[in-house]
Amino acid sequence: MNKILLSMITVFSIAVISCGSAETEVVEIIKEVPVEKEVIKEVEVIKEVPVEVIVEKEVVVEKEGETKTVEVVKVVEREVEKEIPVEKKYDTLVIYSGRGESLVGPVIQQFSEATGIPVEVKYGKTGALAATLLEEGSKSPADIYFAQDPGGLGSVNTILSSLSDEIISLGPNWANSPDNKWVGISGRGRVVVYNNEAITDPATQLPDDIYDFVDSKWKDKIGWAPTNGSFQAMVTGMRIIWGEEKTEQWLEGIMANNPKVYAKNTPTVAATAAGEVEVGFVNHYYLHRFMAEEGETFAARNYFLPGGGPGSIVLVAGAGILDVSDNKDAAEAFLKFMLSPAAQGYFANQTYEYPLVDGVKKSRLLPDLETLNTPEIDISNLGDLENTQELLRKVGALP
Image (cartoon, rainbow, N blue to C red; front, side, top):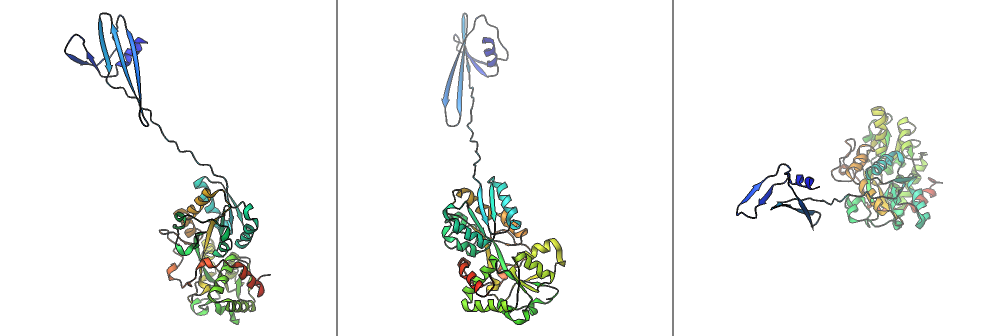
């Protein structure tokens, strides 16, 4: 033990002080020196300081007939405390989505992979899911309601939580609820999709305003999806902009033209390209998904009505957090992700919707929002789906 400890001393610069001399000689011990008798005393002084511990050691060596004090000038051992982040565990986030799985399934999966938050999604029609949420009330397992239009969000506004300013500020004010209950995630314009073999010059062959499709020349040439949430939001916009009477007249005029009924936007666009109908009332981005797969030979194109009015309204898909959710941290993380550049880029380049966050570019295939003749309307007022559906039933568009 004594020899081992003395060997340890060889690594340090030491000061050797002779008790009988006034001179001080500094030497460096590089090997063990044999002695007749050694007495080793080791004193350890521990001084606590924030984060580090400093240890000072003093070694005293005594020989017969001679005493030398070997002092370690400085021996410092540091113990550094490190903070190791512990990954937060989240419960499964339950999303009720009125947007189809083919549209939002991939970006929801991206969210789960990026955050580690497990997700369970219930897909359905926006209106039907809103009705389910109202029926479930405080027993609903849902944390997030992801709707395809403001109408669905407005219909459940009373059971949504108020969102933080941090989340609300991520998107433009016009795309959000004025009472901070939900945020717009992506923008979609209402258009007339037309068969470009039957209609070769839309500027002269198509009307400027959607109202003019009541003309009898459009008999048997129109496709629509009256059960679709975005269509119903557009009709709600008609009621706000035109009033109840004119909206009812328009619906009766279209019904008189014997429109072909489709379940939603996708088959309406497909039927238009196939020549089943010449025009359809849809959201703009469905066409581009078809063209991405089939190319320029796909026989349909979009027409943004230049006359403005409810046929040119720009809707938003949006989402809010349910009041009854006990998983609000994960729910807030979901909304922040959907308004992140990564998710907004997905909507711009994969589903061809309008991104709502500054700095994210739209698809080059779309016209700038600023160039569209959109009506002046607060989209948060489109939540009166109940009276819209009643009107659609009245004219026979809904059973």
